[in-house]
Amino acid sequence: SLNPSPAKAQWTVMVYIAGDNELEEYVVPDIERELAFTGSSDEVQVLVLADRAPGYDTSRGDWQTTKLFHVTQGMIADPADAVADWGERNMGDPQTLIDFVAWSKTNYPAEHYALYFWGHGWSWHPGWVMIDDTDGDTFDYHEMKDAIPSLGFIDVVGYDGCNMASIEMLQLWRGYSTALTSSQEYVEDYGIEYDLLLAELIANPKMTADEVAIATTRSATHDKTWSALATDARLDALLSAVDAWSVALTTSLPSNRADYDRAFENTQSFWEAPMDKDLYDMAYELERVVSDAEIKSMSRAVMEAVDQVVLYEFHDDEYDDAHGITIYHISSAAEKDSEYTYYRSTVDLALQTHWDEFLDEYAK
Image 1: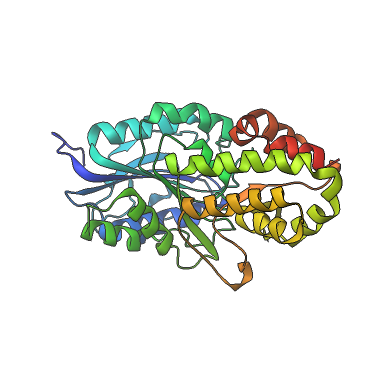
Image 2: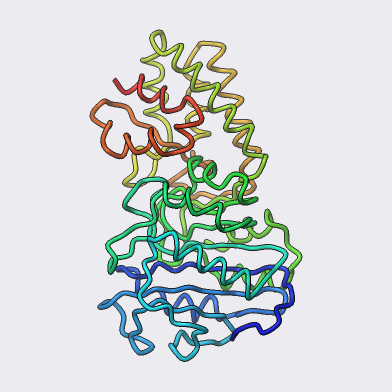
């Protein structure tokens, strides 16, 4: 339903469902059983832009175009319940996101906005995020970087997709959001359980951005890791600490290489993503193993700064040494592939800190 004369809600929650791929079978159930379980209230408006794929799920008339829903309680994901049909839209195209956020903010203005990305993910790596099979596209880091300023401020950003809780993604949203919530690891079938999150938000619409990010994290009850992380000025100390640490690590590399090897080998990494390393654990291992006083103190500074950024996190026993934020890391020249080149030329962490210079020296 269109909002004829929009009164300001407390929160407008936008869910960007990139389901034009093999995840399609979860699109209708997530809309109906999770989002429409509570639906919207006067203070919490829930909007969904959903794209489906041919061939995986034929429910609700097997619609495959991109539909916009204003989610009401008990709504079914039927074409008749959509506010609009946007035709075949490419969920990997930044313009699709810009149009959705602009439409939502115009028709359902609020004090605060939450934006959830539902689909495939893998941090900054090109070719993985929000895969759209029909259009043969993905929503890559450089496209997101270009699109974000056009969205206006988003209080909470959530990635309901794999391996998105990285320092690289945090920095991408710095200044454009307050908090980000996602998993360091592979996300199970459920991911964010919107019914749990929305029940809490509707009961207490005055929740802060931090509280919504934490509630989102707590809703991911089937996952192995999840974290709520600050993306505002609280992130700055961590970026500075990582930069200073990178310089010190590079300077001391010749005398400490064997110790670095040992520390990196012991650092928590993630399923099928050995280059995703837990940032806190990496600093912890370097502090423990390297005798150099400066490296020890810089590593402690990184750990302390991580603690200031992590609002809340959980991990299961398999990931005992996970602390909520990953960082890209390579160990050998063989890993200097096209992704590594993309990282160095495109990703803000590489452009604005000396982390990539350290990796370049270390992985020789």
